[in-house]
View (spheres, rainbow, N blue to C red):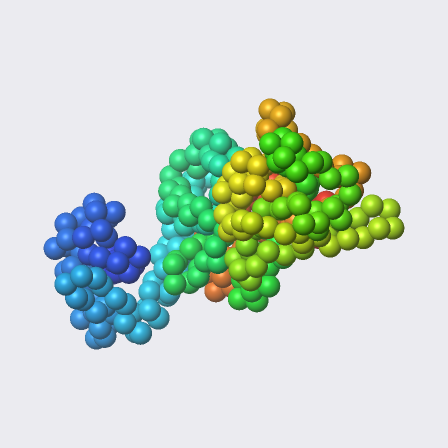
Length: 308
């Protein structure tokens, strides 16, 4: 039994949830994958997987071994890269989760250049604003906006998103154009609420002008937990939006969004790349994080260069 192949087969079965799917990704037969896992269990003298007719579940011992196997396989990748000369490139599968607008407007358009530099990296990109269980879902890193409070994660600040307040012409024609942020608290105005994954609630927005400081919450008829859907609701005239400028730029140019309160300032939103403390930082993860840092420096540079 090749222990490397057996560990790789076991890891893929855990991640795929079935022997059939694991075999497809490994380009092996299901029989071969099954035999490799059985040989690994025999060698370790523990049961790693519980098999039913519908799915495969990892045992308690299997979960412990899985975490170690993932790190060992990553270490082997790094060792091979370090010994194969200066021309070696990071390779392998990378699982990330990013906000949907960031994916659509910044990351995905830039991916062709990333693959020119790193053609052997396979990215599985989840696109969401939800809370991701990075251990259970085996996600290598997430990109998120707002302050991160999860102490189990290592977070690297990669950018600061400048924010503005916007509304569609159809909304302003129907309700009128507010001239002061306090008007958004009035009964005739509506905002589109954004439900933050950490709390499931909309939060007030901090704004200031000279010595005047406000926290505007507003009233909403619709609250949404996805960035692209949030933007779509504003474009449909369903309420006032607080948007990162990278999301509003095209719509301002097209006249489908109108900026409001331009003499007021809003606190910027920090952006972070985060990963579990116990996760091995492989070469492929390092270059992905560095690439995100490069992109954010172009689109939303860190305002305080001394920030972590």
